[in-house]
Image 1: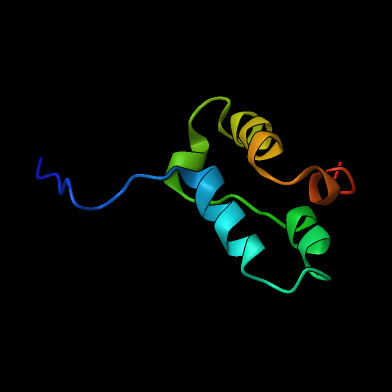
Image 2: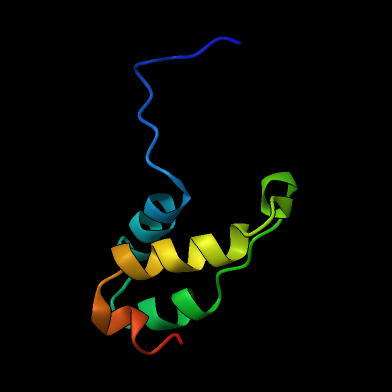
Length: 68
């Protein structure tokens, strides 16, 4: 396996958070409510629950509070 040490590995929760934070603040709550996971890695047992928990740690409380 080839690994590129110059590419940061920031995790799904941080990629989602970065994407949401780069959008208009009026849209952020709706974007959090609209996260959908799909694809091979999402079939890993517990992935959706883990992602939800990790998102709750990185998203600002005012955005996360209205999504649950």
